[in-house]
Image (tube, rainbow, N blue to C red):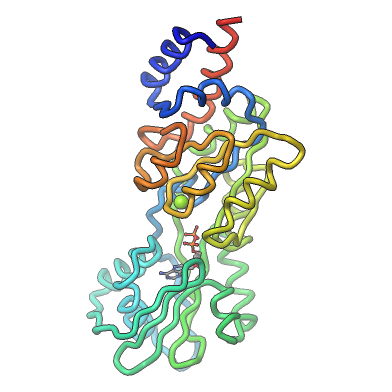
Length: 292
Ligand code: ADP
Ligand code: MG
């Protein structure tokens, strides 16, 4: 493309809320065949809310929620915020915490009022040796509803299953349909559990789901999607999306996301509207066509 056509295309992108951080992106986007998207904060709002709390016999809702929320005051994960908010909404006082520990991609643990609390994903509980199979039916049902099930353990015993739901952005289904109209394959890459990811994928029309990916695993997934020489674009917002944004043929960051994601990306979707992905690709095709 000529410098003039790139300038015109870049200006047109700005009008559409699509910022090209690198001029080459406007050229390379036209060759993209697969668009992979992060789930939380990209396809969804990234503002989960607590929806379900199912406690084991011998525990009360208020007791478990109070203990878990106390631990979550120390975490910066969006799930933690949802749990703390829910406890506050119920007027629960949160006790001080000691020995807090976070295991990225797994969960968090701490001591509260002399009791040992662990909260996190299925794989975290399995790693700790707890019988998550006892809750399998409840977890499957919650996942099929598009909610993310978490587990809480108190003093070495599974005490509850907790679900949070993160609303899908209203523009997401349209954004996916626009990518399909351009003839592209659309994939989701997420750390969340498989059933939840598949339920969300069904709701928005995504073709392929790669779920239960550890925080540093998204890069490998992007490489795998590229097998056979396909050009892959990745769209994400989080700290753990930065390496995948850099690795992809074109990385697109959500403008409302973390600074590190934006700095690793070639393109920024200013308002976080995913329809910008298809707009950017269409613009790339039009720009390159014009100069032929
Ligand atoms: P994602 O946010 O995309 O699901 P993460 O890698 O941040 O990916 O987390 C993976 C999973 O680990 C979460 O879905 C959740 O089950 C669990 N987890 C992580 N941090 C916490 C936390 N603070 N409280 C409860 N569970 C957590
Ligand atoms: Mg995210």
